[in-house]
Image (cartoon, rainbow, N blue to C red; front, side):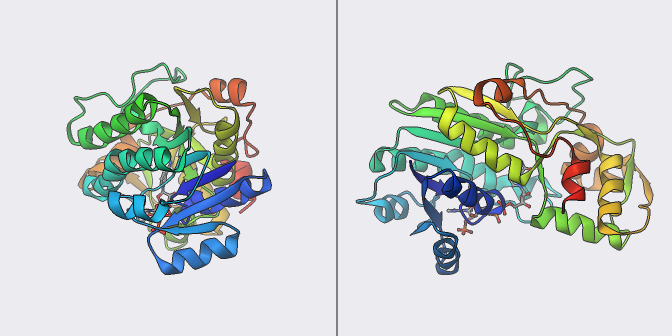
Length: 305
Ligand SMILES: NC(=O)c1ccc[n+]([C@@H]2O[C@H](COP(=O)([O-])OP(=O)(O)OC[C@H]3O[C@@H](n4cnc5c(N)ncnc54)[C@H](OP(=O)(O)O)[C@@H]3O)[C@@H](O)[C@H]2O)c1
């Protein structure tokens, strides 16, 4: 397939290019910058210079091109999102960016559309011990300061599933880790003892960046239109165990303990590291996509860094 990839220079996009090429696909990679275009050409993709937030720029840059599928991996999360405002640009990419990319899909003749979503669309709260499936309510309103993020996650999926002539698929990824910037930064912080272990600690589902990429190719090739898929490894982890494992992988000292309530000063991190307990079911992705993660838990994934 000819695949138009938005976010091709990002954390997941840059790994995904290798997986797509290895599976025999051709990649048209979108970037806003000349330097990004050079990196994409070196990686074996055809660069398309355009801003996804600028409808005219996007459609003009794609004029005359053809693709079978669009994969939307554009985000704007630079570093650790401490505060809600750090996510607003990503919210806009899930809302207006998705709308523009659906128009782009029509222009280039693409029928399939795989979009990136996030497992915490199920809500930054305690989901108990039960595995959360794709049938659980997703991106519901009434979540206070999280509402703008929920609204855009909902808009992202609704647009992709509702666009006429488009076979829309949404991937609700767990938290990325692996050889990528955020994991490296967290490891570096453990070396300096700047990343404490919260007490109490929340529970999250992780996904190694290589496994997120392999799941994306599987969804592109075999995903059922109109379906969302949880993409995570087999072992949800408590944040205190994860921070300790990052410190071991980094060769750093034992992390300090910190009362969880101290993180209230950074509300997004408090919700993520202390308040949320969620364990994702990936049974649907395994059954329908024939996908299994290469790294069943963060232990194997971090050992391999
Ligand atoms: N599930 C998760 O846990 C999850 C999900 C997303 C991100 N993250 C984390 O967030 C951090 C940042 O991720 P990242 O590196 O992918 O983000 P990033 O550095 O912001 O890159 C995102 C990609 O989106 C593209 N992009 C952003 N705005 C665009 C626009 N207006 N038009 C066209 N393209 C646009 C960028 O392209 P150009 O800059 O080349 O134009 C880039 O390819 C990572 O460490 C990652 O782990 C986590």
